[in-house]
Each structure stands twice: as C-alpha cells, then as structure tokens.
Length: 418
Image (cartoon, rainbow, N blue to C red; front, side, top):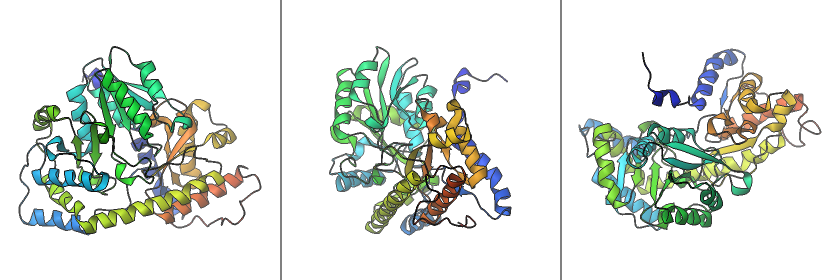
C-alpha cells in the first residue's frame, strides 16, 4: 500500500509512545508492590464538575443530540464571549468565536485556512509537538528556533526579525507553554506581534493553558493586542474536560466564514452533548470550583519544583502557568553514562524500571538541547507527587547524586503505595 509523503513526514507522538511502554510495564511493577506513578500526561486529575456532568446527562435524556451549526451553538459562543469580559476584561464578540472539536481541530482549521505549501511558521524550540505537525500537515514547514531559560523558553522579537524570510507566514506561540509552563512576557509578545503585523503575517496563539495562569504579570490574553490576533483555546485544561474534545477559536471577523466552510466539511460540528455540557462551565458554582482547582495546581507546583532541585533535577524557570516542570536531567544522564544525544529519552525508560515513574523525555518537544530535559506533569494528586519525589530521592541517593546522602528533614518514604 502506498503511503503519502505527507503521512510519512509525521513523526510519532513520543509522549504517547512512552505512555504505552509505561502501561505495559505497570502490571509487573504492581505485582512487585510498587504501582507505577504516572507524571507523563498533561491531564488534570479532576474531572468535569457536577453541573457539567448533569448538563450532559440532561441533554442525552432530553434528546438534544442533533447536529449544531458548524461554528457551534450560539448560546455557547455567547457564554465564551462573556467569560473573556469577566475574566480578562476583553470585549470579544461572539461572532468572532468558532467552537471546535477540541483545540486540535482549531489548530488544524487555522493552519488549513492560512498556511500554503512551502510556507514557514516560526515556533520556539522546545514547543508542543502536535503544533508542529498541524503546520506540516498543511504542507507548511514548522521552523523551530532554539530558546533558553534567559528568554523563558519563548521566542524573542530579535529572533523573529532575524529569521523572517519571504516564505515566512507567521508565528505559532503557546502561552503558557507546554512543556515549560512559561508564558511570553507581555512586552515581548507585543513586539513580536508588531513585527508580524508589519510583514503582513499571522500571529497564532495557543492559549489553552491561559485559565491556569498563576502570575498576574503573564495571565492575560494576547487578544488584547488587536483583532488580527488568532487565539486557540480549549475546555480540556482549566475546565477539566479532556475527553470531551471541545475547544474554540477567536478569529478576525473576515476569517470566520472561511473557517466555517472548512469545519462544515471536515467536522460537521463539534460534539453536541459536549457543547450542552460546556454551557454549565460558566455557572458561578463551576467557576468557583475551577478557581479552587487552579489554586491546588499552584500549590502542587510550589511544593514539587523545589523538591526536584533536591534530587538533582532543577527547573531553570519557574512555570507561571499550566501544570508542567521542565527539569534539567543532565546530572542524572551523566551519572548513568547515557549518550548526550539521547539522554532524557534513555533516562525516561530507566526511571520507569528503577523508580516505577513515568515521565516525558524532551525528544518530543524539539532538538535544541532537549535531550537534557524531562517533563513532569504536576496535574496528578499531591500524594502521587510526594511518592514520586520519595522514589527519586532514593534513586538519587543510590547514584550518589545527593551531596550528603538524604537532604535533612526529608522523609525517605516506602515507595509501596500511591
């Protein structure tokens, strides 16, 4: 069977490959009395709120399951519009909002509408791998530019100026970012957008973690920069509806009918049941619960990241949002004699067996020094995070990665339960 060149260009989603390996090993570890701790997937351990669940059940019971408009239910678009006003003080008219089958569909639609064959889209390295593949699937080329802790692992205006070429179409930025949990400094984003606008390009922002910002200095939408900014958002992260596959786009008005035509053919409409359920996300009781959860995610970050430093896995930049820790694992790789070019990939599999801990290697997120980093998800419970640190601490002590054995005042833990 002949496979298209387009399909052959798409690399595996290594996050999922590691997850499969961890799931395969988990039963063996469970028989040994040390169940696998999964800190590899960015999925909140909280589910949909009771009001959301009830709304979905009512929609099914009442038979409200027919197709909706391709752009989504008007009342849901209105609710999202009001949320921008309440949360961010922004006037985002409902007519500019298109509800989609998850943020993935939103990115696919945006790339199909805006990226021609041969176009280049500038992105930071590291960045979320699927965003690269949406550009590639539209016959464009994702150009990853190396970033460092000094720039919060985000693109700088100087990089955009230096790497803009005739075939450059625009930038695709995530703020807060996966895998680093860092946001673009507002002034830097404003300068980048000004550079892009001057060159007639597009500024496409992945803001799916924006609701989980922990720092007011960064927790504002790039939509404030003007009506030509395109924002992708989702009900998966802040609203804890990962499997419901519902997201949205905020678009310049002339682009709405273009996206609508594409959506009509490619998706018909987003899930009707998920849309009815999502209306309940904006009820006061639901918002209060989301804010409580946001505070819990922050508390997990504030405990977990300093603990990583005690076991030789420092995080160069404290994440200001999302639920990730981008940790430098070079000391571990060096102690284990792992090759520099594949260090974090090999370490991820070593940690599965050595510690019963599933993490995500840097390989998925780019090539600019990513073999030195592993990504932890802090979306899991505090109990699981504590167990992970206990296991890492024991392993670090055995490998001589702790200067004086176990740090004072920190329990070793048994590693037997989660």
